[in-house]
Length: 124
Image (cartoon, rainbow, N blue to C red; front, side, top):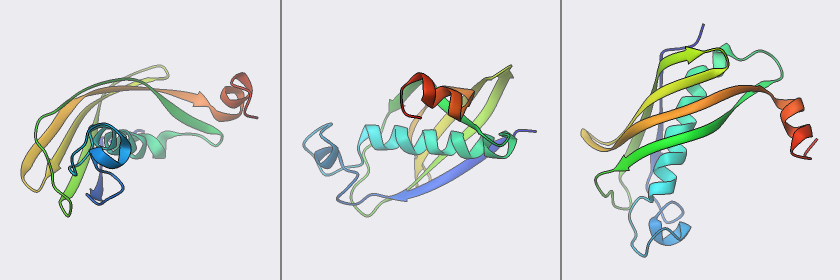
């Protein structure tokens, strides 16, 4: 069975700021990096349910980034499975800097056969 929730962590540094990834010109935690951390949490939440050779791919993200986080800040992202229908898994997402919520939203992933998927995209 799929784990209900997973949380992953990151520290804001020079590599994951808006300036570094090109999503702005300030040295604060970048929105694309927050979303990547949230997706990482979603992957962790379903990792135990994947059979050998399976993976998952993200197909939709709807997120609001509501507060900035400076270099040195500790970020946590949590994904909670809200629905599973066949191969489709839906999540509620939240990111925090300490006790403050800095982002939230929803995410959809599909469980796939990794080898078959990569063959379709020419990577196998």
